[in-house]
Length: 311
Image (tube, rainbow, N blue to C red; front, side, top):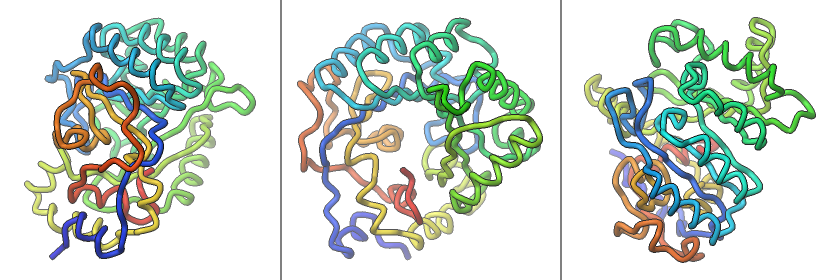
C-alpha cells in the first residue's frame, strides 16, 4: 500500500514550500481538436471552456504588476481560443521568455491564420506534444491522421527557423508514454527522437522532455477502467526521488485557469485544488504568492517526483 504523498515528504524530512515565484502558467481553455487518452484535463472537441477577453485583461494586468521571468501558455489547444494571437503578442511584451504549448495538429489546421507569424515574430518558444515516434501509436493515442499532421507542421516550423541553430526560435518536444508505465530516460529518448526525426523526416528541434502521465482526467478514467490505477500510482510512488522535490515547478510558478482562478500548477487546476486552499481570482492578487507559502499536494504529485522528476 502506498503512503500518501504528504506522508512521503514528512518521511524524508522535506517541507514543500514556495521560493520566489517567477513563472506564470496560463491555461486558456479546455477546448481542443483532439481527445488524447493521456490528457489530465479531459480537454477535447466537446469542451467549450475558453478564456474570455475580460479574463485575458486581468491576466495581462497581473503579469504586468508581477514581472514574471517566464510565462507559459497552455490548454487544451490554445490555438482554438478566440483572441489568442493578440493575447500572445500582449504577453510577449511583458516577459523575457514566453512559451506556447501546442499539440501541433491545431497549428496545422490554421484556426487563426496569423498565429504562426506572431509566434515567430515575437520569438515565442514552441513546446510541442509529440508522444510516440511510431505513427500507429500516436494515432491510437491522439486520433487518426495526427502523426502525419504533426510531422508536416514540424517541417514547416523548421522552414521558418524554429529549431535551427542560431535562429533564436526555440522548438522543444514533449514525449509521454502511451500506457500505464513510466517514460524511458530523457537522454536516451531525446537521442532516439533526434535521430529518427532528422533521418526520416528532416526535422530538427532543440530539446525533448520525457514526462510521465499524470493520473488525472481522461488518463485516470482509463487507468480505472483497465484496472491499472493502483499499480500505476504504485510505480510512481516506488520511484519517488526526494532530490526531485527541489526543482518542482509548483515552488516557483503560479497557474491561472481559463476562468481566472489561481492554482499552484496545472495538475492542481485539473483536480480543483486552489492556491492556498481557497478560490482566488487573478484580479485579487497584488503580486506573486509569497515566499515560503504552502503548496497544495495530493497523491498524483508522485508523478512529478518519480525518477528525474517532471520539470
